[in-house]
View 1 (cartoon, rainbow, N blue to C red):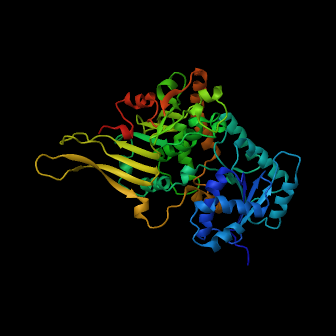
View 2: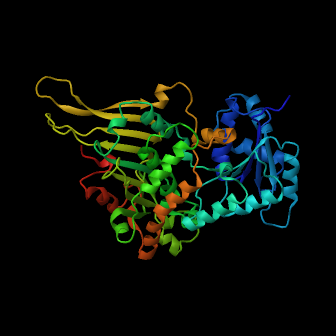
Length: 491
C-alpha cells in the first residue's frame, strides 16, 4: 500500500502517564474508530517505563479498553497495532532509547512528525534539545506543549526561548483542551454566524459576564503538583482567560489560522492591569477546609489522603480564585468580567453566563434581565433565558424560561471529546485553536502582578468549607456592585 500523504508518526513523551492513558489514547482510539487516522499512522509512547511494544499494548488494553466503547474487536486490535513504546532517559548517559527511536523513525522522514510533550514544563526545553541532537526534527515536524507553560512570565519566556531555538513558531502547538470543547467552538459560530447577536454584543446591552469552572473533587495524591500551581496558574491563566478572549474578541476578518488568534491577543492586551492595592479589591483566593461533598464528609486541602505532609507552600496555595476583570476598549468599557474557579465546590460545572441589562422601561412587574448561558460541562449546551407570560387568566405573571439547545438531544452524532478535535488539528496542521507565544505571554503579564501581590501578603487564603460555593469574599466581589453569581441570583 502506498503511504497516505496524511500519515504521521505521533510520538508522546510521557506516553504511559495519566494524561496519556486517560485522555490522549482514548481520543486517538475514537479518531481511529471514526476512520480519521490513515492506515500508516503510528503512535509511539516514550517514557522511563522500561516497556517493550507488547508490554505497552498490554497496559493500554488493560487500562484504556474499559473507558472506550469497544464494539468492534478488529478496530481495537488495529488500534493496538499502531502502538509502540521506547524507553528513554532525558539528559541521562543511557542513549540506547534515542538510538531506538531514531531507528523506528528512519525511512519515514517525509511523514508528519508530531512530538506531544505530556510532561512537566521543565522538560520541554531539554526534550527538544535531545530531539535536535538526535536529528529527529524535520521540516514536517510539530511539537505540542501541554499546560501549564511555566509558573510566571519569566519562566514562560524561558521555555518559549528553549523550544523556539529548535522549532519555528509555526511548528509549536500550545494546547488548551477547553478550546476543543464543542460549546467553545459554538460560541464563535453563535457570535459570527448569527446576525441578531452582534448588534447587542457590547456594553450598551450587556451588564456583565461570568465565567466559571467549578469542580467537586479535591486534590488527593496531587499536592506535589498543586502546592506549586494553585488555581490561578492551573485554571485562570489559561482556561478562563481563553474563554474571556472568545467572548470579548472582535469579529475576525477571516476564519483562518491567524485571524482568530490575532483578535484574542488584542483582548489580552486590553485587560486592565490589577496591581498593588487593587489586588485585594478585585481578586479573591481561598482554600477548602473539611466539609461535605455529595453528602459525604471530606477532608480539607491540608488533610487530603495520599498526599505528602503539608508544607508552608501547602498552607499558602489557593484552591479557589476569583477575579473581576475589565477589557478596556470601546465595546466593553464598564462591563466587568467575573472569573472564578475552585475545587470541592457544590457541583461540577464549566459555563459562560452573559448577563444582559434590564429593559429600559418595564411595563410588567416581575421582569428580569435576559441571560445567555453556554455550558461546557457536564452537559454541553446553550440556553437563552427570556421572559414569558405564565398561562392563566387575571393579572399578567412573568416567568423566565430557557430556549435550550442541548447538543446530546439535538444532534444524533456522538459529541467528540475536546482532545479528539485538537489532536486531529495537530495532525492536519491547523493551529487555530492553539495559543501563540505572544498570546501566552500576554496572559502571564496580566496574571503576574496578582501572583506577586498574593505572595507578598504572607497570609493564608480565605477558608471555605468543602461543598460550599467558595469563600465569602467571592460573594462580596460581585455584591459590591449589586450583582450575584448565576446560581445565587434571586431573580
